[in-house]
Length: 289
Image 1 (spheres, one colour):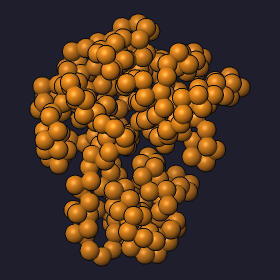
Image 2: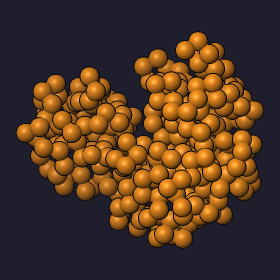
Image 3: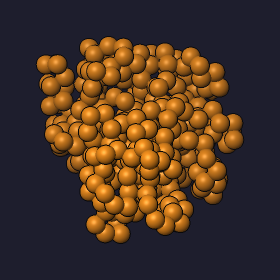
């Protein structure tokens, strides 16, 4: 829990606050944009919740914060009452895990309850609540790691559930427990529902995961820009090759999907034709940067 003595002066006074340990990972702003905003390298409370729905979202953000920088004044029982929301259903059989990890700078992770095999996409913190929920939902068969930055506690989940870990060889150093190694730059069909698509750029071994031609888990490749309302890719966080990242983004035009579910940045759902136009427009913008 955050320390009220370290609360940022910019917070609007009230029930919730953010303290100076915030790492500006954006998780809280994704979950509760009605409450949290960014300012000079921090998130802060710009508007206290106006109803129970907004309060619940703020509590979900508090639980998900990777460094415990969000606090509340008052009945802390409310926090424990919201924990059971996690993992939070996004759509169909796809869930947001919450419990973001500082080890991956607060990256989002996802859980897929597939009829044949459950998947974890990137990794949250290894906490008893998630372990118990995943067990109740049938365990984890595969853990897909989009790239080397967002590994977090994947090893612990793999050991506990006996899951097979997937990562590209170029990003596999340090992940010596991975059993499925992706090679080269061609898509790899793991099963009829899951396709790994190598997308080098952010890192040399970055990959995205396509599920049921509907959900694209994009790691740090692309995400939705809330402010400008468009798909976005960040050259300032491209550690390997911007030219390769442009090529990798162009590759996505060969696939159909409605959802972009990133590790960092806002998720978005759009009709397939609109999503393709967004990708085309993004490629044009990337070429000008």
